[in-house]
Length: 101
Image (cartoon, rainbow, N blue to C red; front, side):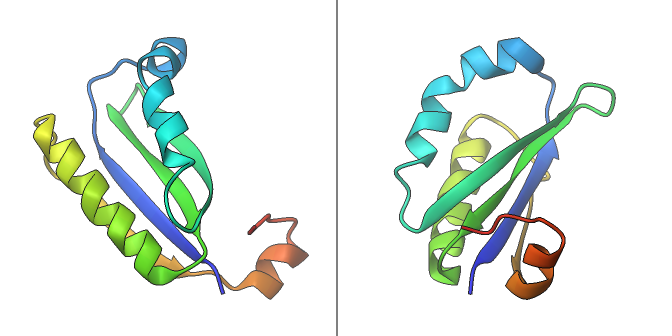
């Protein structure tokens, strides 16, 4: 089974290309996390929010990353961080062209 980690938080920017440049090293480091499969980076300049959708192999890997990431965001002064972990129904996800691993 795989697990989806959803993280979102208030964010003043940067967005778009500037965000990509500013967080390039963070993005590279995520690839080294235990059990990590992939991430979709999310952002909304209109609502001043950012976050991500991650897939991890094991629930404990998602929980460990979530704890570390939340602490990192808090160290940047970010508050109201929302973290949720879900089981992924791989059979239905695959039926709808979702990629789990």
